[in-house]
Length: 100
Image (cartoon, rainbow, N blue to C red):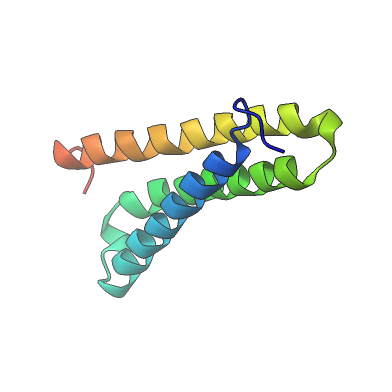
């Protein structure tokens, strides 16, 4: 049974959704042949790695034993926060024409 401090299912849901969005962005850049002219694909790839790590760790936290649950959940939370921060920074840099 989930207690109110259990965040893994929320982390898994949010990070998998953002992972899908990153895949759409990366695919769009490749299809439009913009990837060679832009740094956005590198930042998006880094975000994909962070969100995938968050997905895996939060899933293991849900499926794992009780002993490691909290530790895996905290690491998944860190990767999720790093991924969302990277997307935010990428969006700001793109908005202010720092990266193309």
